[in-house]
Amino acid sequence: MSESKERPRSISVLVVDDHPLFREGLQQALELEDDIVVVGFSEDGEDALRKARQLRPDVVLLDINLPGMNGHQVARQLKAERPDIAVVVLTAYHDIQQVVHTMRAGASAYCSKEVTPDELIEIVRDTARGYYIVGGEKLDQRALESWIQASIEAMSGPYIIDAEEHFVPLSPREMEILQFVTHGLSNKEIALKLRISQQTVKNHMTSILKKLNVEDRTQAAVNALRRGWVRLEDGRSNKL
Image 1 (cartoon, rainbow, N blue to C red):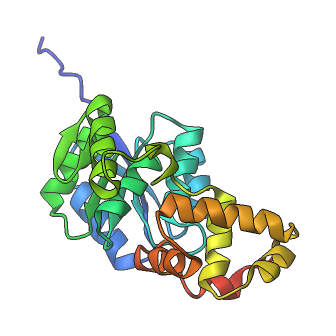
Image 2 (image 1 turned 180 degrees about the vertical axis):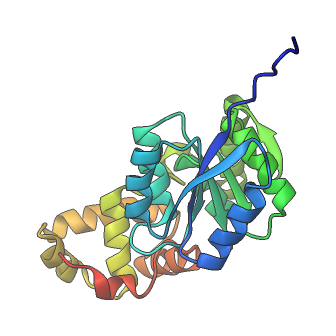
């Protein structure tokens, strides 16, 4: 009687990107592997959250620049609902501040869309096992925290009073306000749209500037656009 080998559990993956060709390419690359299965696709952040709740994937491959909710917002919500899920951010936007914001938002890996299929497959496997991938390096939780701290110090200086005040993910309300700022709305106009006071908008703006480590709302808007956090067309589709 021959021994039967137990087949390793497949890693389930949800792909979130609004470009059909890119999604299909990811699926083809991943499903060549016996231990990886693509269980679903999403084109925007809201649908990604619904699919993640329904399908409960091990790994989510997530674009930053999405219609509606951006990748940072999706990553934060996914991790809040399921701390064990691995979020692998695939993006065309790359700078050290972007990486820090992304990892602090809850991502398990940050990599360029130019990543090779073989590299991506290993990233999926590593993050499914609980590791973090930054700059091609595989880190555990402690090493990731050290990397984040060192990166913040390199950008802000070792004598920053409180590193926690900078490079912290924006809250959903702050991201909403930043979207309006990017589309040129004043504090008064934002307050009217969101049905909150102008002082509340000002308080949120102060927090946004501090978290993004910029001096004014123009710099904040430029940062948001450059990193793909906001799409110009989003402002025309907001219904409040």
